[in-house]
Image 1 (spheres, helix red, strand yellow):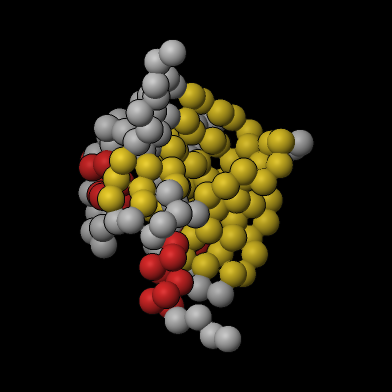
Image 2 (spheres, helix red, strand yellow):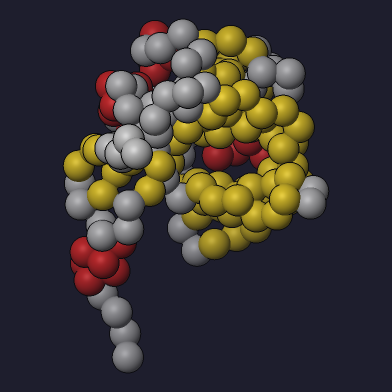
Length: 161
């Protein structure tokens, strides 16, 4: 049985995910994109993976630089997500406040969490690269993460007990 890309997309829209901006730097130029296909891989050693479309501007520079940072956006940062998801790559870093993580990759100040990574492997995944990163630095905040499902942004409402 063959599943159409439309049926696949309709099903995946039901999978709520944290919204991230994946960033890298190569020869002093910053690159980034919005991604929701990010997950932990192992706690020992701390590692994660990010699936990035091969046609994304940042993809070849993640490979060349060997570093990337996963910035988990907080619930107030949907505008940053939209900026990094747009086709206009020129002014993406004008949105938000950015600093260099220890690797040099851009880290978003005020993100719910940021994971600075050294690229361990890049595997082909049809239209995407599966980047495996060894986490070398983590920052967290008290902010709630921004979520995305069914084409909409949202966030958890944490009940008080």
